[in-house]
Length: 230
Image (tube, rainbow, N blue to C red; front, side, top):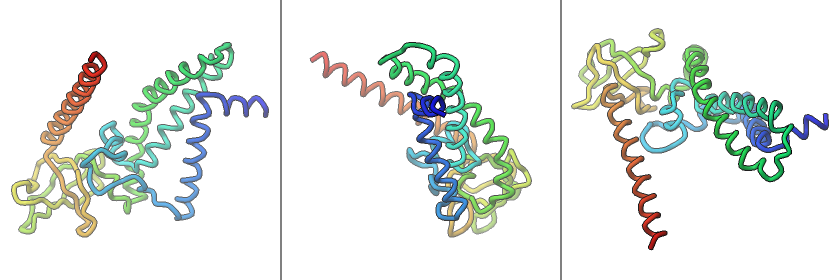
């Protein structure tokens, strides 16, 4: 028991000991209906927030809270394996902190694609058993099945789950057309319908945003370097 406590409280394992305890408390509150499953979701993917970041990483179709829990479990398991196999046998001293940070980074890097694949495999379960969780569908690709009516409404099905049907509501100039492949980008609760964009436009916008962030980051580093040299 003492050995287990030492491992659980050692860095970097202690990070996951705390985070997974908080995750367990959160899911207990969800079970008791004291907390929502869609805790981090917003009505739109616009802006930098946790849900939109997870969608960009491939976690579309499941609640962000579930995706985070899966990611923490897998990254924690990898970190624990490294601790048991390597770190606890080395006399690291103060070097345990920088090495632990590297282990944390590597664990999340390895766990992210695995967690995304697992969530992708489970997203149909959420479509069947938690249909009220509507915002977690943002980022999903859909095939438009019918032309938009006079009010701009159209029906579509998820590309990865054709049995799941959603309602789209387009605006003039961006009306869904039969046969199009689009991406859900906003949920309008008053209409129980989604705003969507053509998949090619969505990918182009994401690529442009990524280039813009890299440019801003590079510009910030350049300004910091110039300030330091002056």
